[in-house]
Amino acid sequence: MPLRQWKEVQEMLRSRIISGRSALALLISGVSGWLCYTAFPPLAWSEAAWIAWVPLWLVCLRASVRDGFWRGFVAGAVFWLGTLFWLTEVTWAGWLMLSAYCALYMGAFGSLLAWCCRYWGYTRFRGRLGLMLGMPIVWAGLEFMRSTLLTGFAWNPLGNSQADKIALLQIVAWTGVYGLSALIILVNGAIALTLQRYLADGLRGRRPWHPELMVAFSVLLLVYLAGVQRLQADQALSTTPLRVALIQPNIPQYQKWTPEFVDSIYAQLEQLTTWAIQSGEPDLVVWPETAVPDYVRYSDRCFALVRDLTALGAPILVGTMDIEWVDEGVPRFYNSALLFDQEGRLIDQYDKQHLVMFGEYVPLDRFLPFLTAMTPIEASFDAGEGTTIFRVPERGDPFAVLICFEDTVARLSRQAVRKGARLLINQTNVAWFRERAAAAQHELHSRLRAAENGVPVARAANTGVSSGIDRVGRLQDILLGADGTHFVAGFQTTTLHIPPADMPLTFYTRHGDVFGWVALAFTFALAGAVVHQIRQSNRRERTGDDL
Image (cartoon, rainbow, N blue to C red; front, side):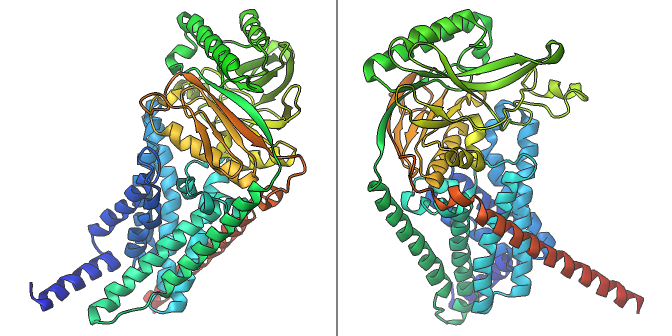
């Protein structure tokens, strides 16, 4: 192809990609969502996150605010429909609605990106620098908003995709996961703006230098070096080893509350726990969420099983439903964790605080009972009133429990550590979603909670992932079958190193989501400026029509 024709083709592509005045822009936006999807389980190509949002940046450079929204929404829809596909095991309608809801936040990001590109400019370095620094904060603000609005949905923040990058992960000890998400968007923006300059200047024979990449990689290097320093400081901290046996019975959800499977469930728990205690001599045994097919405090059979197993020499943390009766015999149901010592005595109890809407409770079910028919639950649970600080019998090591998706709610982990917990235990059951990516995606959140607060995390899951995580977020032990799958029956004994009561608390533990709140305030201020400018433009247009 002659050089002139090749340049014409390049110019056409540049015009179509940057201007985005065709359906191609939506297709390119979808590529961003797909690339981001690949960064999370089941594929877990974490490096893809660092380039995933480059296509969206490019198609929003010359887009209108409205077009920017739809391009961001399409990218978000592709991402969320893919990463939440496991939800179809329970509800197709819920999968579509939740994916659309989450995609709205990415649509908002696309709108603000398009507006800033138009009014800050991207042809000069000052404008590009503003985009590079401002848009990561916007992303963090929107992610924080999604995680806290109403009851919040904190699933799969962008930073979770980098849980295996241990040095970079340490930034969350200051900023929470939102700082790591912002770092990823910063690098994406730098790459996108550099490509834009090549499309604009490279065609004219110029060789642009790359200040955007220099800025982004300088920040990336500083974060990496700070992470390495924190890892070195962690090695110098005096800790106490604690052996924890994690029991994974691998009971399918359809069996858990079916009478004909009760005997096999009890037999599975008894066998696995006996093996774990006799082979590993653990200091603590942990059963997963609602492991027993009964209310342990009111079932003679269940209580007898726990008593007999604790007599083997290890206390057991039991995941169970609990019930109490209030005035006029009205029952209140709880999703609970009960700790029994070596003599089978109930030491302490925790009732789950953060319930899953339509999974553990139905809002307004007393007034709109038909809503219950749309969910897999028969009655709503009640929320617990606060964090319980357990202590390992005969040792005194303080720990707190996070039940099911509570490890996605960062403030609960932070509150527990501030109250004195030096170990977090996640009891969970993702059997609802069978052998889908939900289990692996869920496990990433526990790694973030460990790194944010500087305490180890133990996870006992009914169907996977059962694992031990050290205090910097590094995966230490994990239960796998012979074929490498998480979805097996078995137990995993892990030795976790418990920091002392007077350990230095991380900035995040002491101060919480300062970065998240600042990012949210910046995002609202920017959104307000956009709305104000649009209103002024509409007013000028109406005035011109009148004249």
